[in-house]
Amino acid sequence: MDTAATAEQDDIRRTLRELLAERAGPDEVRAAVGTADGHDPALWSRLSQQLGLPGLALPASYGGVGCGLAELAVAFEETGRALLPSPLLATSGLAAPLIAALGTPAQRDELLPRIADGSLTCALAVSGGTLAVALGLVGDNATGEWAGGGRAGGVQARSTADGGPLLYGEARQVLDGHSAPLLLVAAHTGGFPRSRTLLFLVRADAEGLTRVRQTSLDETRPQARVELRDCPAELLGDDDTADVTGALAAVGEGAAALLAAEAVGAAASALDRTVEYVRGREQFGRPIGSFQAVKHRLADQYVRVQAARSAAYYAARHPAEGGLALAQCLEALREVTAEAVQLHGGIGFTWEHEAHLYFKRAASDELLFGPVHRLRAHAAETAGLFAGRTARTAVAV
Image (cartoon, rainbow, N blue to C red; front, side, top):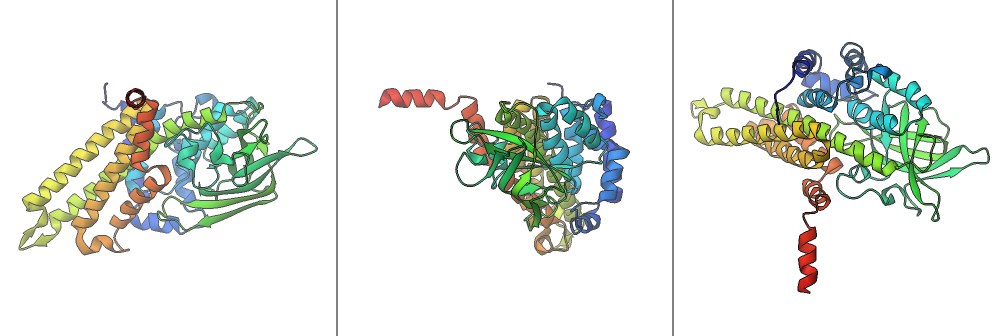
């Protein structure tokens, strides 16, 4: 496979890196996460209107740029380098492709152009802490048990006399759920005879909706608890027999590739900062970066980051490999950030230094979208790697 970047991808990378270097340094990131939105609305507006970032992978017919997943992955890598708090993942990585896949023509015409120009942000709400399961990253999502499964818990949908659905339940760890004007809520409906999972649109001003921002390990990726108490909603699409779990799994593959690229950006930035630090930090009268043991450790991490980058961009072109790529990139991010904290010494553990921000991103992402061993196990099971072993075991017994 040709892994060389196109001229368009190079332009995206250069422009975005220059802007984020100017507007999203460590101090600006800390200030942004402390706001009510959890991100800088002025910067998001600039990214949307000048660079077309949220519409990068949307068709031109909906006001998007018309690029593909590979170009969006470049943007995610650059935002990952800065640990940029933004609605990009929740809106462009998760919600927009679901609306494009399942929405009616009227819903797509209304929502996608507003997503493309940055005036509308969205959040995907699934019950519990099951986002990785709902997206089919760590297990089969077809049963829909993660959405409630017809039992107590999760989010349940029921029809009213006038035919409009009402949602009742709770979803936690909803990315950007406290600030997004539009929620895509996965709910269980139909009861036991016609059990199924559907997606519903819930507006921020809907009656019975309560949203509370949660304290999270990684403040640069804001999360919320969403409570729905007989909350009016609108079915996404016009067919309650649509393959929602299949659409979620397909979106999950692309989202995994984007998250992999984002993790690579964070790992590369943490490594660059560590290299810069060991070049200037002196011990025993010489820079610690001049010691052979330190050079070897940094060289190992450099190889790890480059291998992860190759996996991420392969997945951006072949989304079916997104889960495996995400596993490799999350593992690389974990190893690189742990090494960064170690090589920064005592300062790496302090709140004043940004090394701990990268370390927290690594830990948080693996909790949200992993863990790594489950990503790999599900990919192996999907590929049928365990089928032969199962058959041989049965014969032996």
